[in-house]
Amino acid sequence: MPALVLLGAQWGDEGKGKATDLLGGSVDYVVRYQGGNNAGHTVVVGDQKYALHLLPSGILSPGCTPVIGNGVVVDPSVLLSELSGLNERGVDTSKLLLSGNAHIITPYNVTVDKVTERFLGKRKIGTTGRGIGPTYADKINRVGIRVQDLYDESILTQKVEAALDVKNQVLTKLYNRRAIAVDQVVEELLGYADKLAPYVADTVLVLNQALEEDKVVLFEGGQGTLLDIDHGTYPFVTSSNPTAGGACTGAGVGPTKISRVIGILKAYTTRVGAGPFPTELFDEDGEALRRIGGERGVTTGRDRRCGWFDAVIARYATRVNGLTDFFLTKLDVLTGWEQIPVCVAYEIDGKRVEELPYSQTDFHHAKPVYEMLPGWSEDISKAKSFSDLPKNAQAYVKALEEMSGAPISAIGVGPGRDETIEINSFL
Image (cartoon, rainbow, N blue to C red; front, top):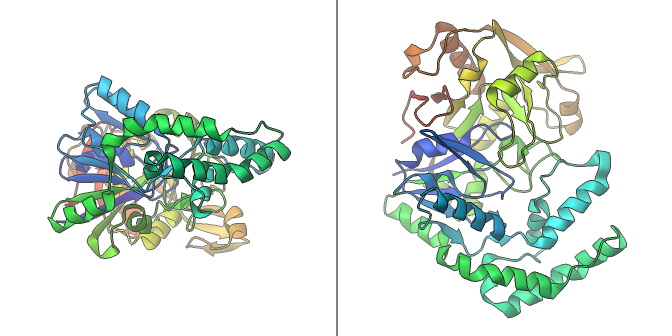
């Protein structure tokens, strides 16, 4: 049976939660492999709406085992709060597995994130202020705290001391903030140990054994391709690898185990935070997309910047991820426009460019080259098959498929779990 990767093909917020949830009933494991509680998913089941931040969307599917992999950074208070909220709503969370090698977001990571972003002023990156970046920095600098460290007080204390030796110097001398006490941090972190213990596991072993037993494993990326630390619009990116390669390192599964890579595309484009965005709209159309699409961040609560579909970044996502399929979401939001612009190329210094420029400077100066496609006015939310869509909606989907370089195998025509047209099975 296949191992699948499902990831965002734009700047995140494409509807990965809906796609993962759709597959959740058919897979045995759903794995978050990177990011932290800076990435949110909204899943609508019947008349119930769930906002997930750290937990894999598969937690809403009975019989599916949700896994938080080693590549994720975990804020224990957020995780426990999220679990408690789901339990109160009758969702069984007992199957959750948490990698002992996942890194912990400590209180000082959150503090450093917030004060650094304020210090940058106009040069700020647009982080969520949740300590994600500083935690990944600690991981790379080898002063990070892992989940398994919560179960050895001596090691935990030594690691907190090592991290705060430098951070307290920066906080007090550069930012004029109060030093953080080692004992206070250690006490807080140890307080989570017993509560997390039932979930902690060797997830690398569990997942590889599952694949050997022909179980279906779905790897769920947070954020999106253009926010990847290596392949995104640096420096306006996240601190991990949401691209397909990140699934291998973030879950401990070899690339030969992965058989399908599904990219989630919104039928238009959105972005949260700072950074270049060639098709961004500052007019009534942009406001309409934001209003109709409900474009507000699940985790951040920030309004999303909105723009027309960008085929250039879709082609780029296909290439760097090796995408085999697309899941196109929110097609229903475009209902009502007489004509719908689609960005097919960029103009940079008077020249037409059809692929994403590798130069940060060029991308900042890229102007969209649009092709106009006819719109539709019919309600498509009840469509159950591709042929149920209006002819112009069908033509729009086919045009995006041809421009993006991979087949569109499913289409979202509304927010509900059942408001999806499946063209080709992902399994």
